[in-house]
Each structure stands twice: as C-alpha cells, then as structure tokens.
Length: 101
Image (cartoon, rainbow, N blue to C red; front, side):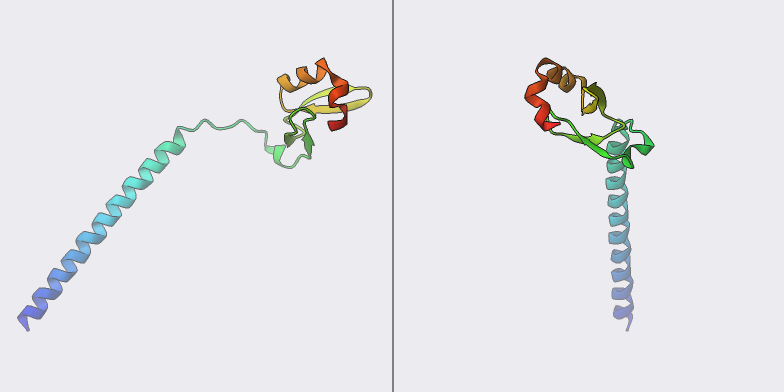
C-alpha cells in the first residue's frame, strides 16, 4: 500500500514538473512573438479607406482604395494611380494606357 502512494506522489510530481516546463516554454514563445510584432512599422492607412470603393491603376493594374490613390483629371475623366511613378509613366504616353483605365 505504501508503494502505491509513493508511486502516486512521484507521478503527480512529474506531472507538475512537465506542466510547469510547458508553461515556461509557452511564455518564452509568446514573448518572442510579441517582440517581433512590436518591431513592425504600422502602416498609416486612413480609417475610411476600407469602406471606400476600389479603383484600378491603368499602368500596373493594381487595385486600391480611392482615398489612397493618386488622382489625375484627363479629358473630363478622373484616372487613379497607385504611385507617382505610375502617374508619370502614364503622362509620357497616355494613349497607350487609355484602354486600361
């Protein structure tokens, strides 16, 4: 009967050691994950950008929110670009990209 209790106590001791080790390991992994997330630079996106309609850049074909796009008026029509570089490329040869707008 005494060996049964000794085995039970030893079993419970090792269960405690293993669960404590798992808990420490989980904390370590969570701290590593949090430290990598904190190093990311947040993207500055307006809150209403998610609810705005999407527009398509005629140069690269990228879709983006209307509020984030670079707009240019071309013959009574507004054309949206993802960047200044795409807008400049369109300004060089507008007729080439007019069909994609």
